[in-house]
Length: 467
Image (tube, rainbow, N blue to C red; front, side, top):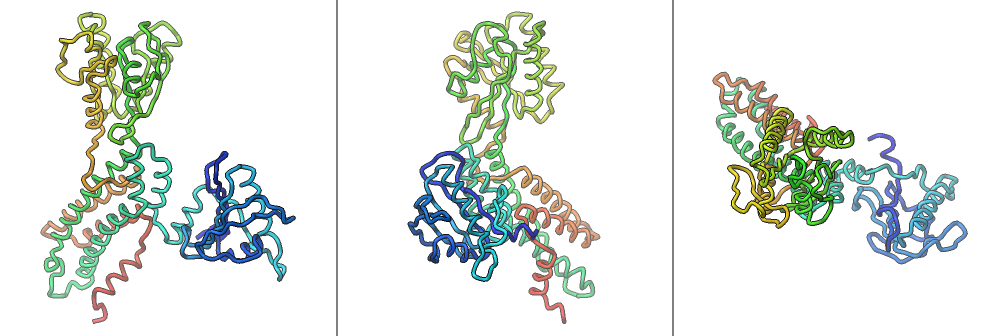
């Protein structure tokens, strides 16, 4: 730990602004002296008491609840004091100032009541909880993800990760890899033994089961990452194809101005919707065409910037103008430019709009709809989920971040390499052991734990090394 990790800290734990209740939280080692100086009495553990919160002159700043959580049975693993008062910004600032003032006072021996008390840094209470082994790194991240969740499904997935479900799966994979590493290391350390540890222990079967379990965890984590991040969908097409109307129809609100005048949309308009709990960030852009208007040119340039950063592009076509040669040429230019500018991994969905006017029109591919009447919107929503790769996991998803997925991808790579070494006739056990070590390390990055001493502990507990 760094020296700052030993400082007692305090902060306002509720959101800025006015509210019915506001909370000031203090965390540190041995807060008994601070509590006694604040209230002139001790507080029972985990019991809410209604008390006056007084200033230096003995005048009440407010009356509220004081709760003391002695270490280690607290969120941070340290002593924690919570003062629950009325949620006015001034009241909470006065309580902060009073706590710092009392902490700096001298006790009966002339020492500060609580030396070093300072305002907490962003996320420092959760950081203390991680450092004191109350939560692991994945759970700490899930706290922020739960707060930031934009859909019910994302909130439920974050709560599942916070409860330790994701970490439990990671630990199970890690323990299985450690056990296999133990066998490989033992074989390397005792090559003269007649017993073939790997064959007898079904090392191949163990590795196959690890890879199968990994695929399940990765699938659920991938869906959790999708719930957390969502996808960026850009609506592109020629002027007057109905892009703004489509945005309004998907959002269920009049967000973008809709007129029959070409070039009405000059800049990007964005709205986040949800489809089956997946956040979809929909961006309406300026119509793509050659223009002499300077302002419209800027809007078109920004449209292409948005398209280049998209996860999915909705290429909107106007069914009422398909027989116009100039319109067909414009669509062909846009299609060629999309093919040139977009990575092959970014899907482009052809959307054929104004089906309410051209009732007999059908498209060979893509989605036919009417942004005006809503016909075909459900099919478009399903196409977006399919393009995003969304498949609701049977066992629920874990909220996950890109760093988790990157670590899991490395685990997959190392396990595949390990399987190759294990299956080779030469059985390169030193390379096999190294791939397993790297896979284990990648898993440990997710939860933020593990040291080489842990592996030694497992080996010594399972084998009679001294014989």
